Amino acid sequence: MGWTPCCDENVTPDGELSSMRNRFSLMLITDPDATRSELVDGVAAAVRGGVTAVQVRRPGAGAGELLELVRALTAPTREGGALLLVNDRIDVALAAGADGVHLKRSSLSIGAARKILGRKKVIGVSTHEEEEVRAASADGADYVVFGPVFRTPSKEGIITPRGPERYAATALAASIPVLALGGVNRRTLPELTDRPVPGVAVIRAILAANDPEEAARELRSAVMRSGPCES
Image (cartoon, rainbow, N blue to C red; front, side):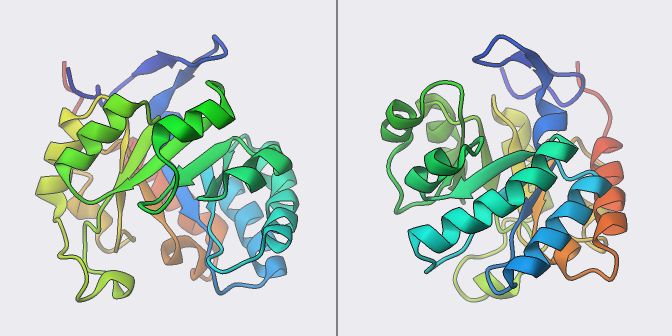
């Protein structure tokens, strides 16, 4: 059975009921080039606007620098009820008391990460193919990001955009939330929202906006209104 796009409640490892759609409906990935103060202010505004999960991504940062950043983002995410995830660095996620990690291709396997983190932590995975989504779900991931869905400068000439139709088919067939990643913004989002969208992951669509709080609010509202319910 595929992911249910509406009113899908799941029993989390700690026994609490939570809406999977609400939990992963809008993920903010931090801008690796932003300063710490810019990120703290931007994340705080984004969470006020409705961001439900923040993935801290800082390629090349040392463990100490990354740990300080994650700790600085703990207060705004906790106050807004958003998940705080660390890209790749399981050690930093544990040291900072984050909610989980997002794994990339060069990271530890999902199984190895789960042994270290335990069942209560969230584990997400980056995927580009339908087979990778199925494998991540079977291995115990809580969610995946799938993309790039649209053209995006960071993947230009590297990965062909998957397109909204392919994304939608992949998301509906999956048993865990599949977040659309890559080129998702106010202009492209309408191409997704005529069908059920489990969630989206963005960077510039929020952090580069003049008003990150309002940008987050508009994106979250569009995702939550997306598509007809499927029985």
